[in-house]
Image (tube, rainbow, N blue to C red; front, side, top):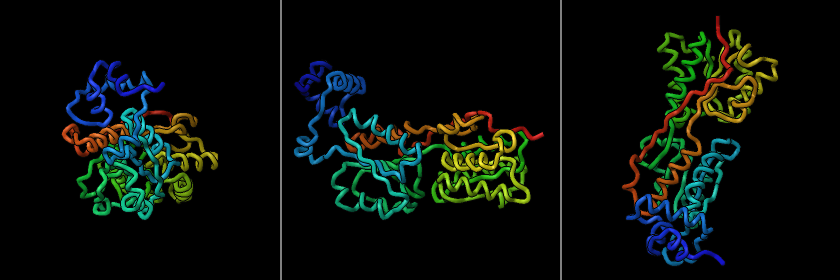
Length: 332
């Protein structure tokens, strides 16, 4: 026999009305009480009848996570983070991929699909914030939209690039290249600025032939690395500005018979399975991934339940960490 809301209330030793407020994400319930109710829900296997609830409230208890693709393990990690918060609160999550096309995003914002969801977690395809002034509550993840006052969760991309550059310079490198995705959002612009500013700070010339901009995929990392290696004066180190370009770069180097950390140095923004286990291990920036999804979901659920006051910062910037492995060779 299925557990009822009264069973949950009895287990948590609270009133039925309190359980109702928690599962509907209403305010005036302490975090301690919320935790007790969530514990009871999990222990009893209580399943909320969202269809019946939506008929009363007009809320569907569906949220959509809009991402460019699911090739990148960063996005799948964000999705897991959102689900880990939303599911215990009685929300179902949908995942929608855009392939960086705003036309596909429009079907979420303006089409019939928008009526199916209460809110959105969004990794945007466009930098024009006026395009995202929709009626559905939305939280931006990873990519900040210039001029926007939307709720967002990002990381310190500039600091991450600086940490990688300083690590390479510490090992004596002066000929450092960068492989980046498009310079549209903070993820491209801030990492590129961190790269250039660090060179200037250490009085190292910024060489345009060492600056490679493509898309954020493995194939771009591969062919841009190949392009760099064909230069008359090739770099001694490469900074790949995300995990997929780093994987592509490493593949190119291996195909050419080069030993990473000996013949050439490679560092990357974003930790990954490849960075951890490809010999000799790739030095990289580790950033919050599932945590970004968790925080974004907490923000969205607070908005949906009328608890905006619980959100401490409208724009949250999370810290990054340098993970040192063995992919940086010392220049004598």
